[in-house]
Length: 213
Image 1 (tube, rainbow, N blue to C red):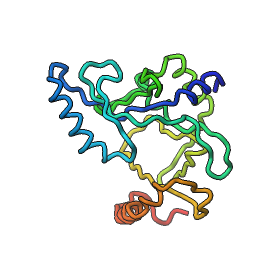
Image 2: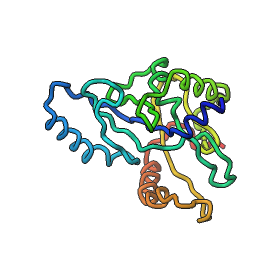
Image 3: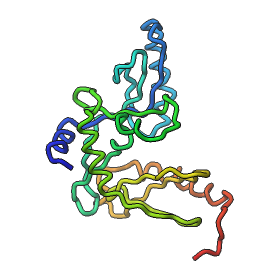
Image 4: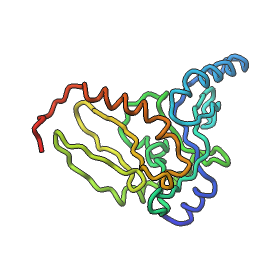
């Protein structure tokens, strides 16, 4: 990625809105504030992240957005210590997402902002993120029964357009070495729920041959 763009994003950090709720702009202020508090209390805890409810951060009158806290787009690999691009702005920036086929309703749409100003990422910066991301795409053809594990510290992940049902499971993996884990606690704290979900997956019907090797 262009080092000037990378430095700008690192210095300014980014915030991602994960949903939109369009409230009639004519609603009185106290009612809009009540709706914001209700969404903050009832909906935000469902996401595994810290969210702030903000009105009209993208300029749309009456739009209530659930926005993540400021994060650096750069992280360090927990084992090697090497700096890595660790965010999905290429997927969440509206300027990039709107060029792709998408059937998600507006409530589920996302946007990426510079954290210091809450302005959406510029088209120029979005295009540089797009260029760098797509330059390194490696397509992997999969057959029924295949399982693909992706280390998100080493590679972004995505999928092409396809027909049929989508069976998608997410799991957290960690290391026994406390030094590697550092201050990260989410994986450990949620391990009980992770085990329950994995146990439930064992009971789901499998539509591929069980004797594949």
